Length: 517
Ligand SMILES: [Zn+2]
Image 1 (cartoon, rainbow, N blue to C red):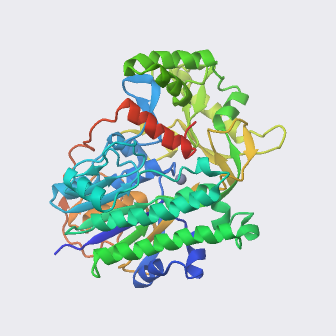
Image 2: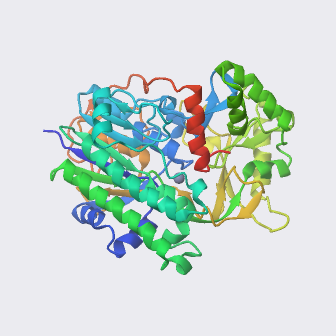
Image 3: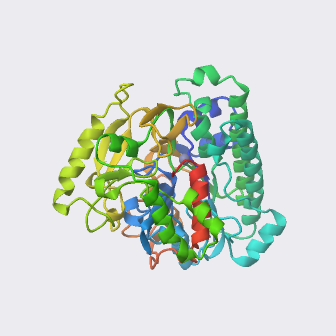
């Protein structure tokens, strides 16, 4: 008989926070799992944002392997435009598909980047970001059953909208955790071998309110006894209760793994890398005319109404459109520190000759590293990686040319106007070190592993191997597996295409999470 495995994802959970909550006795279910098995560190991808990391979780490949580097990617039909990444952007076979092909019964719920949902051998509830009105559950008879018995609330916790009303954000988090746990309980009915259920509340609360939860935040001592800190710890308590409910669904013999896609660190200052690159002379701002022009070009292809043009003008993903390309040699988009060279032959308005590519990258790296805000003396950039410093793969070319790493207490964000500014909201951001707990393990200390190791681990425990992936089975969890059969790796995610209107709706969710401008 196959070993039943339940994976519970806590997006953004970090040992600094979780250990504090464990010591307060607020996470009894997690504590029980650790006592029965072991705990370790799960290292995120570089860059450590959720879209790359969960794609690595699903495939076992680094971003250079699966091609998901950012929240947005180039539109293959219109190189001037960026579109939100979706499940069809994952260019490798997921373990859900490998298990399905081998006849293993799977369940997947709320894993980021799994919209559009696709057919697997089992049931799937797609994960963020989901356009309102879109169908996101497969197969369709399960979609109907779920709608009737425990409707799944999509997206939510767009924390950028709650700065004046953080109590509402926490209320919403409580409701979402409860409702989603009920949906997951329906999902976990019947027979299955491998199930994954993800909770996003830790990440969505720690970005704006990290100071209340992170003992390493300079303000933490001042706020840790506040009602807000209590309320936030209360949400974690619910997430732990949910863990107990899901473990009960899986049954006493199941192996339970709790993991995060990245950890969290304190933030006190924000920097806008594109604004800094402009100040340093590597990029130049575009005019409103350029923006209006690019929208006009784009509008007729959608046959949109006049009011929709206004909507589009306001909401177009404008990172590339807002720059004067003729005077730009390097630019940044998103929050992860990724920088692209405006390379001729690759970028639509490229200015940099391929022969100058390396010189430009070195100049940009040097300038960013020595950059200081003239007024404040702020130095937001602690390091700059070149593409070849990152793990290699077939889709390395889709990745950034340079990756800036923030100094301690700094966060890179595209949605601020100044080059640098202080920050109370957000007060937390990602770091690479996430959490890993397994209820049955060969050692209490699992050590450090990579998020790319999750897929090979889950496959090995079902008797399968995936040659060629970057990750390796976690030996302390996948023990005594014997000879493994090569798993089917044909094709990547096969799901319906996302419409342009849905892309805009997804972009709005990303904007409300502060990921894009
Ligand atoms: Zn996050």
